[in-house]
Length: 104
Length: 384
Ligand SMILES: [Zn+2]
Ligand SMILES: [Zn+2]
Image (cartoon, rainbow over all chains, first blue to last red; front, side):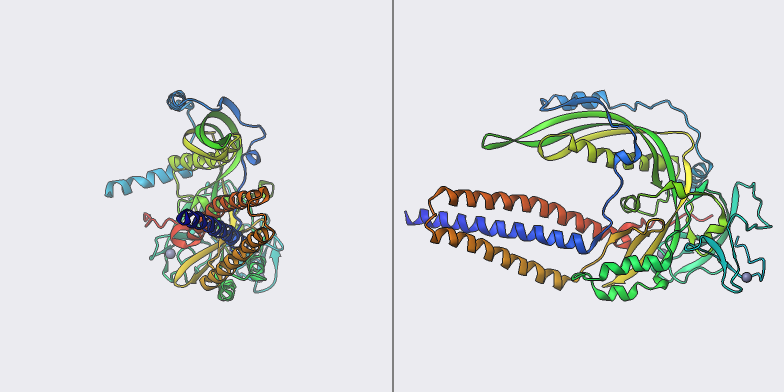
């Protein structure tokens, strides 16, 4: 009986200490973030797109077979075959890469 | 190459405060549009540059000046040597520096005020010699983008939490996305410099480069597509995670495709680089030369942070003890209030744990990114 109470007591204290450590971690993170971590933000999708994402598939709580189906449906480049003109600066750089590859 | 003052043949430097080229010798000033280099062919696709190479890290910088700074902008080593005169393709445009060096210094220095954790000795290093203005190459792209994601999330069901799975696929067209055009600067850092406002951009004129360094884009088309895909993926993933109504949402697996449209625009964007060493490690803090945004994670005084951590822990434990003893003394030990209080503390604990842990991991990663070994990919570059 005594042992049981001792166990409960230990679990109880342990829980409180864990909470203490967790809150401390959170506070330290907040302090470091405020005083040392500068400019940690970047632009969002809607900064670069006037429209929202157009969903082609939108399913919740899916069975495990869905993963295979999803990636077989989208596993191929939908833009394959589109031709583009490449800026000269980029062409020049790919030419310069060639001797490098020979050395390797 | 550098254009000289038409009144005294002195060196002209672009001043961000006045947006004019100024002569330090006689005090004359000119609008960049009005200055003409008699040797340069206006209709040429090329412009002449002086390329300097760091023999320590292999980084290249371009300057119109006949003398480059004595130490490397990227790794901080005094190993900069003149390498060659080179003809480079003119970029399509640039955003001139609008933030002066003094303003950049001020923006960095204000971070030290009322700041208990970053070492004051770094502030002493925030002097003009350690801060260099660089025009960083960017590609402005329009693109079509498709991504498919398989996500997981935790959902409460009665007393249990269950892991559920979600399936998403979508497409979006993006416009005017800036893609960091140099392989050397880490994309995870350059992304944070945004936004850049294209409204202020000018047709490329090398006069704007006077007094600054610049880099040409060293990537090829494949690199550009890879960077563009990564940039879009980062933004897309942030959005897609929000569409799942669950806790602790994670992308288990994803696949994405990008199609960069014709004629991406080749630009130069202004960035101030503040390079310093702390405890023998080099760090680089960046300042957006248009908006003044400061980007980077400063190292902190370890002793201070340890002291703050201990003090916080003691305080938190004391608070918890006060609450618990308060409840016990009021004979609430077996009442429901006690149980609720305990449950509340546990929930608070696990919330703080996840938030704190994820946050600290992120800051640690950012600190590493600010250290020069990670912010710059030191590939020994090809010559000629
Ligand atoms: Zn003059
Ligand atoms: Zn170097």
